[in-house]
Image (cartoon, rainbow, N blue to C red):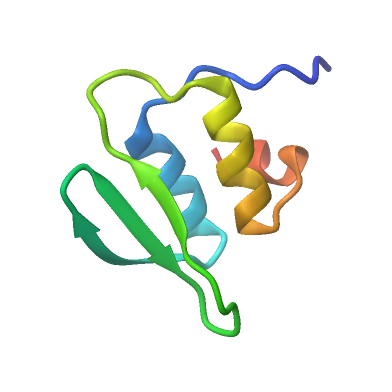
Length: 75
């Protein structure tokens, strides 16, 4: 398996995070904040019309505390 992340739409990333227990807290402008019980920080996903950049997706996965393999299983 390659370690390169797939190209994802923002809504697909949010759906995977919701499967991991994150819930949408709020949306301000074009950014959606997700929270999780027991976690002090929020994960922010930009809701732009284009796909998420792979570096941005990697940062979102890291902020969520998931490994890339765990995140890809949730897709």
